[in-house]
Image (cartoon, rainbow, N blue to C red; front, side, top):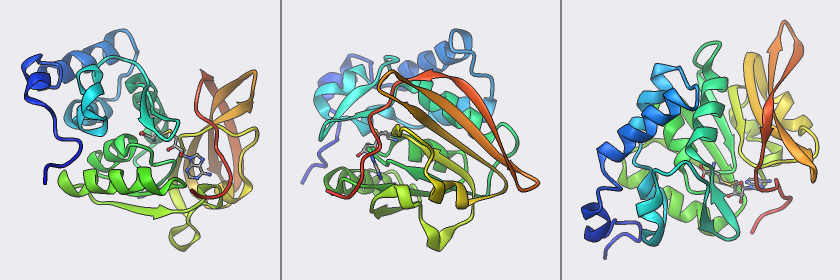
Length: 225
Ligand code: SAH
């Protein structure tokens, strides 16, 4: 049986799923997007984003845009993934990272490719099943859990890094509790009038917050599907 996300020969022929397309995307992230961390750029150059999309959208994988992944969810635009990852590792590589919102699995794959021990929680089982298959096929070691990620993943806490890829009106206290000393959490927070990308670090027991700018994410929702 062919994996569902195998790319069509036509898409390959267009050259839109090739290493060259990915190289061009990385040059745009660097030159227009202001992404400067070489390790992050290398990870973005390595992870085949087209394999995290349905075949019909694979040819658009290296445009800098969010795209639908089913169940009303989206894969984040490459610049947002690069920016969040850069913000997460700017003050040193965390040992262990928790992602809330596995979605397509793309962001988790970027984290794992950076060499981070990656844990990812997703509330929609159908998305998680497909993402797990992608991790397996690409030989990536991402630990996953089907659950409401607002509770974090207490068994593996504390985490040196926490990345939330869905927006809530306020920061989840459980996630802050699972942030290690010296650790960094990056999350979109805000209401219907727009979300801000926040970075919160735990320094000497104190939480220090920075606003990294306006963003648009799908909502962080309660419960599981
Ligand atoms: N990081 C993903 C982005 C997916 S969009 C990627 O790289 O593709 C955000 C994801 O968060 C969606 O899949 C959505 O189902 C999930 N999500 C929303 N609320 C959640 C919650 N409480 N716990 C876990 N996942 C959640």
